[in-house]
Amino acid sequence: MADLAAAADPRVAAVWAALGTVTDPELDEPVTELGFVERVEVTGQAEVVIDFRLPTYWCAANFAFLMVDDLRAAALALPWVRQVRPRLLDHMYAEEVNRGVAEGRSFKASFGDLASDEELAEVRLKFRHKAFQRRQEAVLRALRQAGWTRDALAALSLAEFDRLSLADPEGAKQKPRYRASLMELGLAAGPADPALVTVTGAALPADLQAYIQTLQSVRINMEFNGALCRGLLAARYRDQADVERAPELIDFLAGRVPPRPAPA
Amino acid sequence: MFKTESGDEIFVIDGHTHLWDGSPDNQRNIHGKQFIDCFYGYHMALSPKEQIWPKDKFEHYGAKTMYQDLFVDGPDDMAILQSTYLKDFYKKGFNTVEQNAEVARMYPDRFILNGSFDPRDGELALDYIHFMKETFDIKGMKLYTAEWKGDSKGWKLNDASAYRCFELCEKLGIKNIHVHKGPTIIPLNKDAFDVHDVDYAATDFQNLNFIVEHCGLPRLDDFCWIAVQESNVYGGLAVALPFIHGRPRYFAEVMANLLAWLGPDKLLFASDYAIWTPRWLVEKFWAFELPDDIKQEYGVDLTREAKIKILGQNAARLYNIDIESQKRKLANETIAVAAE
Image (tube, rainbow over all chains, first blue to last red; front, side, top):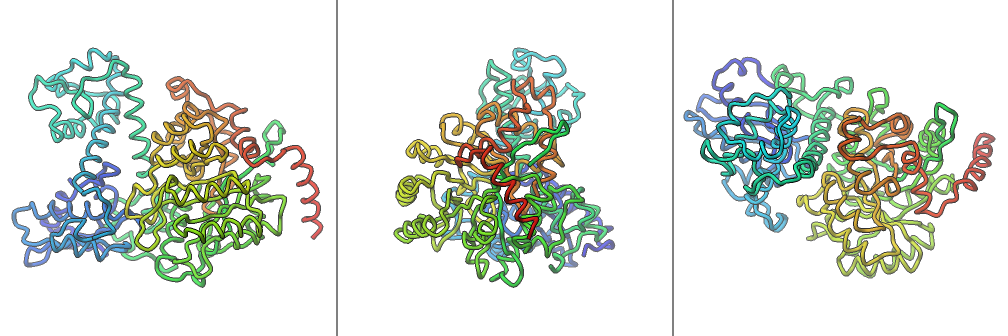
């Protein structure tokens, strides 16, 4: 059960903020907002304990490993933190993931023959590309709605992009996230560089409508998982009456989410 | 039978149903508990509140309840039973062909029974296909390519061992191959549900129909790309359809993609009973209209005719059901059941 006294500790708040930078690679949303981080505790020895729970017992182990490892790194980046113990709970591979992350081993080393051939770094990159595309779709739709043509969009520089404000709420929300993706993937560096390019760095295609539909199909796939995950998490840990709303941080802090699944 | 507001009667074939036993008595281990809990999570996550069942009913509902939910309270005229084994998780299996046969025997005109095989069983898989055809006269198969077995983390439809099974299916007239390509459940390797193997199998077995369950979501684009090239590839709407309640705009986007790429002749209605019940799904689907901006963007519409095809005509064509003569048979059966 989350501890309200601990929530008042500024160190705990700092850890929560740091964990907010970790996203679910498949959903492109912060794990704290998704409700996956259940509890944060800071001991007297500056050791951080993080309880982490996914929507189902079966969630893909490579994603679980990736997120748990990211949580560890995010908390460890705080200068005063000496040790981090992330704990994946109620998962088919909880033990393997927790041990692997604690011992600093790779996903492959932790899972041996069970792991796919794809290394985690490749998986991570694949999902960074998808996040870029999903964010860009929202920005492009918002700009097109505001009357921008394909040619004007292709010519838009990063400096001009930064000065824009978007009326569409989803576009406005995704604009800074899109910019972060653009920089992270090295697709733009200076203020004169084009702000809107494809994920491979090419100019926007001439048929913008078809291009946006390609981006949209990436989003449709991500949203399918996102909606299911949120729903499953809510269903797993909340009363039936409340399933329509996904749990938020406040629910965990207030102890409204039971720490263990209710007995059947 | 679904009756529209104007009094029209729409013939409904539910493309994906189960008679399962997920009860604690049948659970072999923690995996069995977590598996049915996960299904219950889907049920709670996407159902309207008033449609949510108590957990114990969901775990084990029995043949009579199923009949009531599908055909008496629900609008289904017929339903296709899909078999899922999971013998490592459940003592008697989760919903094997034997378990599903219980309800199919009680109401033979209502149900179409499908089996399942695992090509990794080699010769035994071929024997088992013969056994299912002779014992249950199965009409199709439900396949899970992502199921683990020993050291194997899944298989592909274009594996040589799978091709031998398909050759036998073709020979025995088992024409409809339903493939679970959908939300990942067990596998470590997400790509075990990759849809590209459908492309090879569908090209090489033109006499079989491949119904991709859950439309390949979350790989809708890959699925659409394959389905548009293969005349014998269809999409099953199980799991996609319940989004109609909580996220109607999202559902509209998925439908617009499916209609634009596959068209209305290649989509099958399915409740995935007992994860969801068919009544609310059919009612909402019948009342649903694509928003204007989506219609324009994709140049498609979910018309009345398209809905009639999706709700029953398409499945009737795949399973050789003459809707008019089936209606007459069912009218007699209803009287017999009422007289019981």
